[in-house]
Image 1 (tube, rainbow, N blue to C red):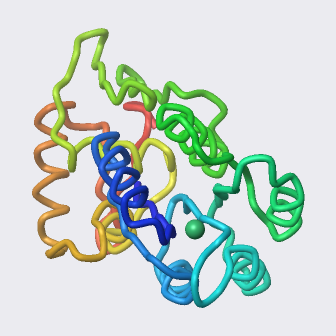
Image 2 (image 1 turned 135 degrees about the vertical axis):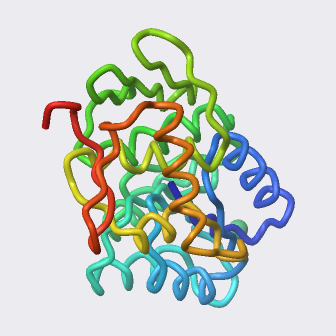
Length: 221
Ligand code: CA
């Protein structure tokens, strides 16, 4: 899962990046509204954290432009405390959730998890596929009730496939959703990670569709 953080307060942005990365996300940062709008318009994020008070272009107008252009990524806005009119403007512009500053990081993480799974059509925080279960809040994975240890990249790929269970996900799509923008992407590494996941999870969980991509499905599907 890949996120965009648009926040001009460098310190807060750094804290967000750190917390989100340790929660397993790939994170891109933008520090003003123009840059943020551009990234959200051109890169496929699984969720966006958007501060409303931004230099160059304010958050509400950034969000309005995205929605007008058909960009549907879930957006959580950060508002000033007690500024109820900001929240109203944000929701009217197409925000999916909000947090007032200052906020507690665990609450932000929980709200983002909920946004991401709702946008993928998943109601539960526990994603499963046959003998496999993945707890998105704890970031833990079990196969037949036994813990499976995954690296950050493996977990990100597995989470994306599980959020889109039953659908064919192309290598390009996976690449775009598991690496941050500044990461040195080599599409071959996706194959390496898939190979490692198969070793850990057993064959038959991640199906290869030649020339199209990968599909996570129940072992008998
Ligand atoms: Ca700000």
